[in-house]
Image (cartoon, rainbow, N blue to C red; front, side):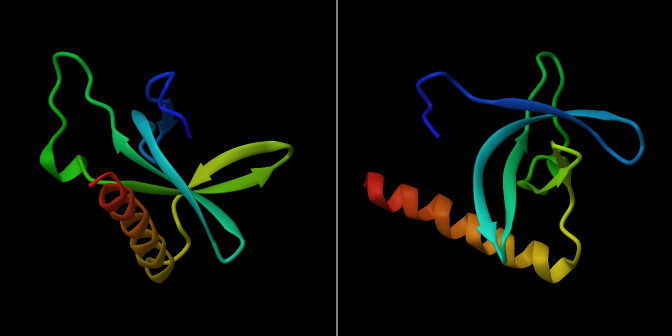
Length: 97
């Protein structure tokens, strides 16, 4: 994804009905499914609590012609996808050096 146009933001609603604004970081494929990684976007005048500032990984689900975002199905799936994102993010840093 090109950064020529600036960051991409999405707004999602969590299970408590609270809206979260997320900044898109990257996407990967794992076991035939697409996953996207985000960081919580900082809202002007508000600080994001440290425990909520980490990488958020969501699975892309195609339903009725729409792309929906959902949490990974299992902890093992989440950990495997997290490792893929870490490899990708750190390999980009190595290439820039």
